[in-house]
Length: 208
Image (cartoon, rainbow, N blue to C red; front, top):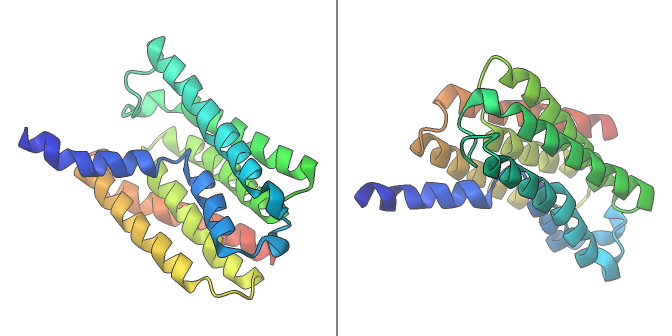
């Protein structure tokens, strides 16, 4: 009973900041910042776009992964076995790219679309790393979020320092949670964060 209670917090954090949900959180932060004109997000459509991002990048792939679990194609929804992660990662990459494609086709939120392209690239990179090593996908996503906001600060005149610091602190909480659940060792967690941060920051440097 005590062990269950102790694990409740890290499990909750792992769900709230699941890699599939990070793009949605990123878009909500962009909305909260209020600089919709710079991001070319129509104010009247911001919540509709947020719903689209959530549905395509999170809800649909999550349902497919749930179906895979029901069909016993994966042993658990948390996908703890390295060999079972390839298909879910590919599914994530496909729907991340679809989100990017739709945003580009609709000619809205091009900078966020660029972030989704970066998320797709990260997923593909994680897929190749996963062939020989179980890198933390949670921290890869969180590192990508921090890298994107850090790179974004080069493009926007608004002060993103608070956003970047908040994202770093959240990444620390997620890292603690993954370690507490024994989902990864420290090296896999640190490598995930640095991989996500490095790639996404590099991409935003190119955009700059």
